[in-house]
Length: 438
Ligand code: NAD
Image 1 (cartoon, rainbow, N blue to C red):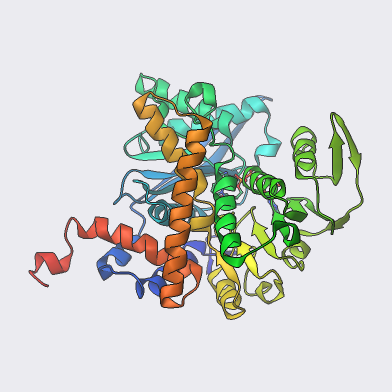
Image 2: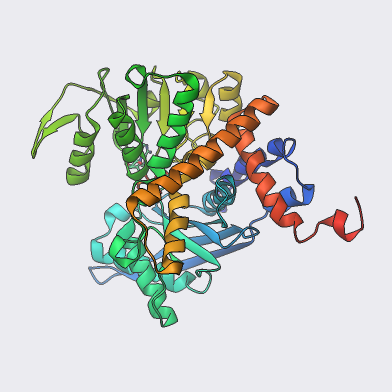
């Protein structure tokens, strides 16, 4: 679905595309139609301009957004993205997915999201700090521990969350760790948050593997995007014996039929910012043979499990037919368009949808918020145990709905989310209550 922007350019309206899933799921959910109507309209949208003094003395003004999509089940929750392609449609879609995701895992939050139009790789560390603090100065009255709680997303990290929490605390005159999650551990972050998104996806894959009777050594995996989410799911699968045969970053990918030593790749990538086929022994890394491939080629590889873990809209009408993997685990938000979805369903692929597969991150963000409120901190083992319990329970509930109605897993996940959101909306009354209906 495309629209024309003010400057005449064609732009994909990813929000409209995202909410098309609601109508399909409504048929399998036990909720009032009013609830679905409400979810088609974000609750509040804030657009801001963030002036930043650059290191050379010049001034740059960055555009930013915060969208609160729905707060029926609790305060809005969702990350802040720093990326040159951020736009309002995207932030609205990401906020909508957060509403659904929090409902899927049954945590008491609604959905929200924020973004700044910037290429952070072009900024110095000091400029990045000024931008992060400046963004909070602009949205500081729109967010809050009981209103809307940001977290990291693409190209934002724990240190940025620390700056943002500090700025909010200064604005409000008291230290407020509950306003943001994904903070550094010494500033109130939770143990286990760093790998929570990848770990949540890993628990989903483990459940699926149990149902399918997979032998990990026989399963070839390709991961698109080797950042926070992609690295950790690859690491955990590799540790279980899966063959991770392809990985990529924004510059392209590498492929090796025998699989990669994932801890070596992670170390090299994080130290050098380069994705190279390496094997590391101690501090010495050696190149290993591998093919270089494009991100598009990675998606179309003959593998058993494909994990898109970078950006949205990478599987669309144009390339969905070329996807060979029978199983797709959506670690990125919105990697498949609704047109792409129809093609994957037709081809009987199993797609573990984003609102389930990547929900581990927000689940541990919830744990962080709870710990901050309590002022009492859990061990990493406790965090893993609680995360595992939630992800396993919700994966199996959604798998059960899928089997019960013979539907795809995405529709089942949305129906599952709608049931929970609908109950909260109906609890305050819908037309049938107010007009004395049945
Ligand atoms: P990140 O910034 O840590 O990593 C992003 C990775 O994607 C990097 O390796 C980057 O090089 C790569 N990339 C960027 N553009 C690309 C392109 N065009 N093609 C291929 N790779 C590209 O971000 P992240 O936190 O790992 O987030 C990745 C995805 O996971 C996003 O969709 C995000 O919304 C989603 N997600 C993240 C979390 C979390 O807790 N981090 C939680 C839920 C969902």
